Image (cartoon, rainbow, N blue to C red; front, side, top):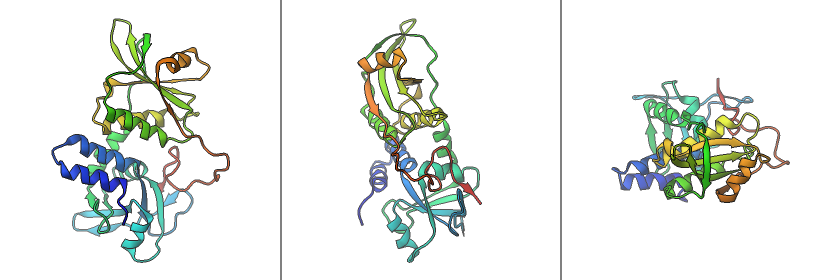
Length: 261
């Protein structure tokens, strides 16, 4: 069976068990992966009923990072919900339910305890502080880890329709303090929190301290957006297709996570 990105991240972390950055990268990949959650019955609107297994270590639900792996496990077609790992973690947090991931069908097979899921949910919930200091100069970004740039690019590429673009710039504030700023341009109404959480996840799972990057939201007609465009590193966010179906499967809309029944 074809190796998935989650398999690769898991293998890398297993090959270097003392490397905390690789473990963080694995959890970041898990949060971004599309997972197929085994259900007890077909979803009803945005409400789902995961199939819960009672095992020695406590109740758990099962999810797989491909539909084929779910079918390999069940041996026959079964109801499921496709949703991002982030949405699944947020759904399970505080429930006392573990997650069996790719159990028995992939190299990345593992069991995540409720405690691990609670920790991961906390990591996903954190958000960077929005810009508060007065910036007196902008310059091209310099000195940021390549892992962070890659994580930002991958994270923003998955936030379809939440903003037009973003610029990463170096900054100098009053008093001489230097730092970096991610200016997110034309955020969709109400999307600021989801965008900020996505940026925080890119920071957290690349092992970079949140203090290295501020976030601000600007409209494209704002002169500060033009200033950022002149010196910044640009990230384009994918835009929603006009032909996209009006009905979104449970968990795929970041503003409407699935609900347990």
